[in-house]
Length: 353
Image (cartoon, rainbow, N blue to C red; front, side, top):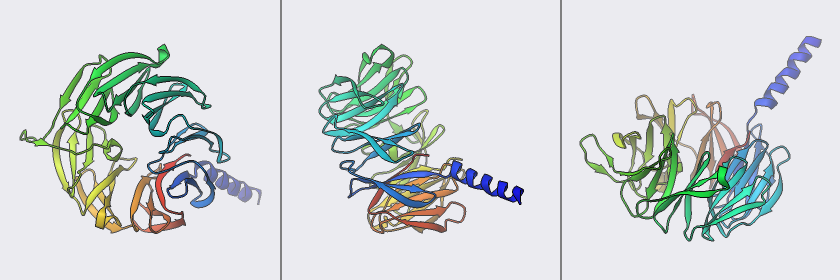
């Protein structure tokens, strides 16, 4: 009997230790839904305008940036807001860098450096809307939309400016790939690549093996699926995903899709990717086999699928269905719906534990 009780207690401990906890954006309510053990347990309210909100986790705490500039620190254990500040009027993104947090603003035209307790450590006036803020320690790198530049700050030298690099017309978003800062442009073809070891810069156009140029409009790199040295890129205005070798920016394959793609999310084991769609096909998801680089399944997943995220172990796919007011959970082997949780107008899904 004691042995059975011990096994039961171990099972409970194991389940609690490895159960995932999610924060799901309730877009119209300015709140985060707290999902634990696949149940809605509470809401974190009054966080600001959560259109395009971002939540990032650092240890026992999560941080949420609202579109109208509010920035909140949340205790992941209690789901309580520890502090909420308004360092700007329009926050576009943030990142952790050492013991600090860096926020890129549209308005005002600056980058704010915060302590992790949300005290302002320093502000860097840029005279531009700022995007693509990324860490490459000790460097903090971001792009200036209105100055056609990339700035590199040194965190070990109190965020002094290490380098200003002239790039293409209206940088719009960026990603870090190993030691490369890859920046896309709103008013120019191709991408710019900054080598963060020597700060050299070059501009690269996407090409087919036949040297034909391929244009990707308005690059939102958060929508790309990244697999080692390849990226699966949702085309804008085309029912296509492009597979690109990111070492040389050559398109190696075009994958036909059921609709106009938005997000491409890659599974933790990098064996599959899932695509959601805009427009008349926004109820569908497609599954791409990443070995064959082809769609192997397309199925209805809910009215206006806003966001998709794999569980950490890859066995489940979380799907926010905006007009169904639900977070849906699919088994990634059978693609059957295994759970549906009522969440008002859900959008972004973030794993916090």
